[in-house]
Length: 505
Image (cartoon, rainbow, N blue to C red):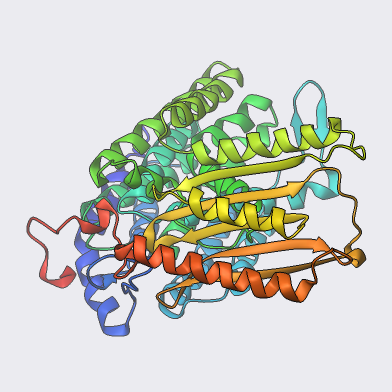
């Protein structure tokens, strides 16, 4: 009998014993997450040692299980296992440096690419995908591997923003993937997944709200890498549609959160790298769900898609995985748990495109396209927006946009007004953007576009817009006394309770 479950218990016990020691070390070298009163609203510095502890415990647990658990290694298994170890080591080093020194995005991405490259050169590849007919990737297969791994790594990284979130998702996903590997007789992959699940379960003891330790980028990226690599080994190489749909379903929650972030930022004119408080855990907190309730919800949602992935593999039907993802999306959007604002943004974007396609301008008619979406928060921005729309009409503008993104207020709002049928080339149009600044913080931006030969000189437009934005800033300050000091979410306000190990206080 193969005792692959030995890796689960070994990793869990090691993390429980090692983490307090690692926390002491972390405080001495400054490997902690300090509150900044803007996005990081916890009360005190928290050790960023979860990822490093899970990595060390996982390596030891897998080694012990392979030596004493009756798991047989083939030549390919050994090569790919060493490749995963080397890749994970590189990514852990990058994560530790990022947690300590806050690396730039391109530096972190370079480290991720190096880690994935090590996977590829040690055999983590697949060459085709079968839907109705086989689709062979050929030389592009390497790009597919890079895309899959980098998306998985960064999706988990983006979702790690609330106590226990990434850990819970990692536990459910790795257990499901470990079950599939065991079911298929791939005991090495099952051992790896169970070691990850056990390590994360042990870590959840310290990461459960209110957290006494964080995974850090080290841990969240490690989860994404390991699950992506195991999916390639145990599922993708089979090429069948169900074998590809299954791991996608198991990682559906981080993929949905990342997709929503891209939609939210692109459709509001922001960079996809722009930070906000619109991720799943933020939205759940603003909906009134406490930290524990949020974890229960995310566990249920993740379990639903994981079960869909398992059923897809067992019955060789991709429809189970697809249906589970669709069900979770419907529950989240219809129940206003997550994705409502992004769905509205998409709907209004498509509606705007449809209107512009079917609208035929003439001399007697000039329609206006207007959209506004409350992405986050409850403050009424309509009054400010109405003043801006009136300004646009009075000053003969082609377009005006208000974009509010104030994480410390838990407020986000986006509105756009433009004349339909206007055909003005960039050389015949000017534009300007002004910030909205309250208590020395930029909480939003107003941008306008107008014809170069407009009846109102552009200097006058800019001067009048500056006066209007100043009035709006003053009205916000008067109406919102809570703008300073920053507001905190329910999870941030929850006091710590229960005994805390001395090394973690």
